[in-house]
Length: 130
Length: 361
Image (tube, rainbow over all chains, first blue to last red; front, side, top):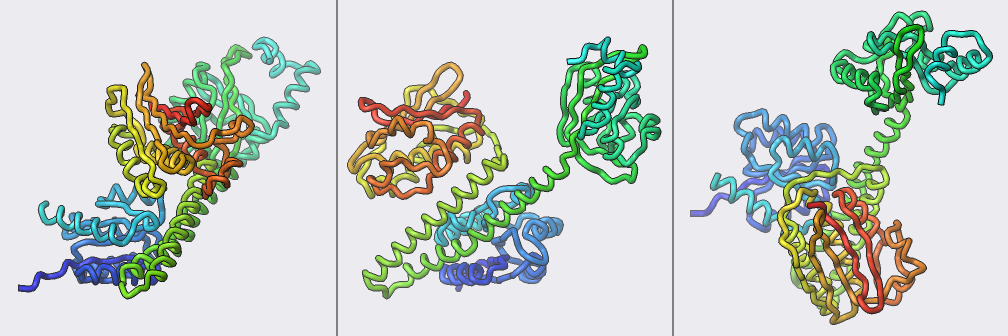
């Protein structure tokens, strides 16, 4: 029986970055949904039930932290793993995101895509075993 | 300094000195008022504070200090005013002040020790409107946040696209070599942008410090692992010597790692090929002391006072093909000091160059 691919939601407004991450994750066997702003990410999370969310902070329409706050208000997303994938390195947005249960925080320029994939696998495994 | 008795005479009498002081009090650009110690009622106020609050002299003399601050801050402020009135506190910063039209501005408030006249005790408060400074701070924060994002976004894209290209297969050796060079160049640019943004944050006083119990030895080992690619290029070796029992310390681990990585990076760059870099960990009564030593070129005496300056690169850096931004040690110093430590170096022919940093126990 074919194993069902884990579903990753990428919330990233830069299309070049979003596409390259998607290409990498698909190559690694994941199913990927792309959102270009926080509002779209929230809508897609509700309809697609991702196993993990890669979340940028600075996005138009609705930023990542606002999206995360609204997501965590819904019972079914209280435990959904969220990895902040951002280039904002400090400030109140990071503190707010950590308060709302971000599982990890990766600065895009400091990590290879292979590292991002490894982190995703780690978080999914942790979530599976509670 | 005006003595209490003379102050009393000046505020209530008619002499030349009294008139001159009243002129001075009235015309200083910062807001100033005298409030009764017991009741906090405002007894005297200058023109500047009346302008700041949008009130007349007659109106302000019917007010007390609690009338000019938002209600939600009163509990905290009453405590501070009591301390000021007793001469136990001389200033408070970033305090919200409410104008007659209910709008708020922020001020730094300095207070004098209490003085007595007319049988009542007063203390003087001087208000400095910091609205402009706060706007500049906010603009600076917004710029830093935007700059870190906007500069790093295209760099992230290049980094990841190059990674995918190198993994895609079907490349000739020459193509892989060129792409490898591009990766290194991109990483250098990322490092430079990170350094510039860190330096800007330091100068803006925006270095966040999050202290927690930290295993120092573990962080030192992580730093040596991170340095491995550079070490392998020059066939260098790190020797770690720990001569103290190192217990966990309450520090910001990211700042500690940043400072150690920068110092270690510097040592790797200047140590000769096949050379050794020694990391020494010892302790005195109050601090852990970490030394990073290399036997590369000495730091010339004429340049030693510039070593921790922004963009300092030694004259001999070019001879050693050291390509760096000149920000590493500037950032290391700020990170060490933010953790409550000290940083210095010794550079002598017999013992090489050693950078020391301390961590409070």
